[in-house]
Length: 181
Image (cartoon, rainbow, N blue to C red; front, side, top):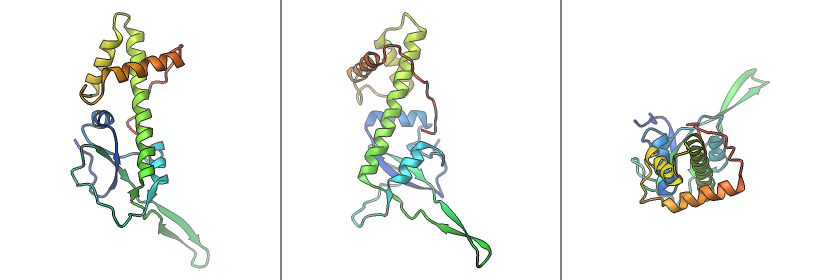
């Protein structure tokens, strides 16, 4: 079920197909992420927003197969006018376009989040079940998050797991399951 975004503008971020499938699975089959104002994702998005360039072509309202959408909030700054003795609200967020550099930063952040979820899952699955093989754990992860093996290969995930285990032999991973990214 898609969140209600009737009053929320969105920006598009080009992501890898496996990351899009993961976000759809975590976000109730919606490609629209609505981060809270206190989240790191919203801070990154706000940092990279800019005014719309003249050659910009908007993404269709239904989204795109290679992109996700992130809701952006309009923020107001509050100032106290001493002469008028009242509070004045000023709209400060007129930027509603994510720059290509900003899209890369957001995609990298979401990729790190995906990898952290994968590593936490693998640590938990292999640590709690001695009879489970790495192959089966990776396939279960892909099934759980509805990731098709056509868009990500088993070898990529296996290599990431072995590299992680080599860097962190203790295997201590902070589990994350925060829908707010």
